[in-house]
Image (cartoon, rainbow, N blue to C red; front, side, top):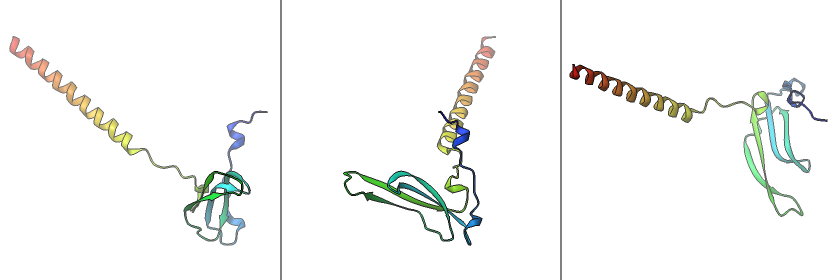
Length: 114
């Protein structure tokens, strides 16, 4: 049975069930023996760090990270990607410059022809 995206959304859950719970912790990597993500509340700031873990018998290292934040399950979205905005604005200004330069030069040609 296929599940829809709506069924996979994890609802926001405040940290009120933890005494003085004010931090959201997101752990990404090997958790409980398998690769995944775990979110939980904490009364302490656990910081942000990553480390490499090698499990017994594995030839591969796994990167495991812990992120601590104050809300939204450490899922805050970044702002708009500014380099794209600058490229768009620069291209727009240059296009207008070329258009008006060509427009003004064609208008002056008509004046001299009369």
